[in-house]
Length: 343
Image (tube, rainbow, N blue to C red; front, side):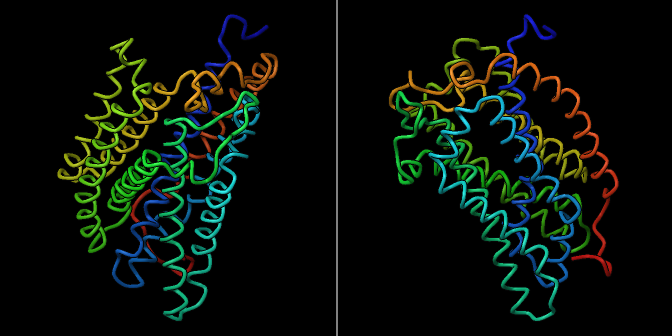
């Protein structure tokens, strides 16, 4: 076989993680722009905010769909358990994403102040709740959920709203707002850009505080997330690189290098999710309190033949997706300008 000798389960674990990391980097600033949207002053600034993400927001969400599709094909048991156990939160997330899309498209259809204010509030609240739900889901995966021997979720919605998951959710909101404030500085100029620079200072401080608290809580209450680092100290380099990436953001902003600051913000997400993946490996959905019942990349995977065929398809399709994404961002590079076709 073409991929004989390779551990296809690990490869697909990395591929699914890569797709979800791509979603976090790209749709992360979309959600963050929505969270920051109401902090602007006047209709023109809000239109600038919307048009900074206008050409890319819908394409960014495709990464979530692709990640979910890859999870379904490679690890169907994980997909089934997650989408049944997390059904209400995931449906709420879907509603929030729909509201964001409707708000973006409908906001500028009418000139009345009440109409635009209504959609501005909808856009901001749905972005905030969407980011929070994503973070809470991530926190539950790290903490573990009650699973039975039948691979089914044995809990309720309240089970998912545990303090640790909510803390990770708040940290995710802080991360996305920091990411978005850097993006806004990169894409705007004038008064809005100066205001966004102030957002960067505040959002970096908020994220660092949340990150430190979440890290300490993880060490105390979810110690299994650091098992691989304790066993292989070389992996600690990810944590060091992550801290360096965060530290470089204000430095690049100070020197007026907004694009570099945005790159370091993206790297921060890569290293953070790398640490997360390392922490849960080889599980995709750990079980708590019965750790042995968790769904791993081996007991919840498709057949080796299926994984091999899918890998061939992924190797052909992924370069095209990356090329298309890169071309879109290249075409719409530069500062945002309003015209008659703008939102």
